[in-house]
Length: 217
Ligand SMILES: Cc1cc2nc3c(=O)[nH]c(=O)nc-3n(C[C@H](O)[C@H](O)[C@H](O)COP(=O)(O)O)c2cc1C
Image (cartoon, rainbow, N blue to C red; front, side, top):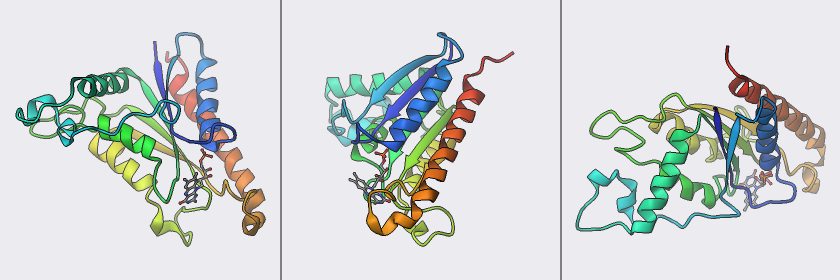
């Protein structure tokens, strides 16, 4: 019974591109039958509290016993980590906010990257190694290789660092760029490129949902 964990973080609940694309993945995923389950975590609608203490960054056995972690924060972290480990595929909607990611998504990352639990520290610990993660990024401008703003993209690099490098997940990025073309008058000449880019992103998420959601054998 393959399980999809669907995470959204856009503060736009009306016309978000990342939400549109993560929803497209989920609907395609569900076409393969009711056994393809979906767990939804909307980090904007139900934001996580910031981690209340730095001790939460570490596996329980690595924490300083003189600095106890609040029980509810410990339980929340366990729930988030278990939910991630138990899912077969993770889809993350990650808009660009101020050249980076929404703080709502960053808060989730601060809970689930735990040396000694989800990443290797003093012994090999990699329960997420190889798990597919599809990260749907959306941004108003464009930041791909060769573009003038390439070097100020602080959206994809930290997500790649945490999910792929630290956690060992099998990460695929889907980029929807130029989403502000129809809203910002000086970007009007990019409207066609923006629409073509979104259409390509839809095709990519559909192909990925088919790849990971289709029953094997
Ligand atoms: C708080 C905030 C900050 C933003 N900062 C940037 C930015 O630094 N660069 C950019 O290209 N777009 C920026 N945008 C535009 C969003 O990246 C764009 O609207 C994107 O489509 C948002 O994703 P969504 O459509 O899934 O909500 C920002 C939007 C918001 C709301």
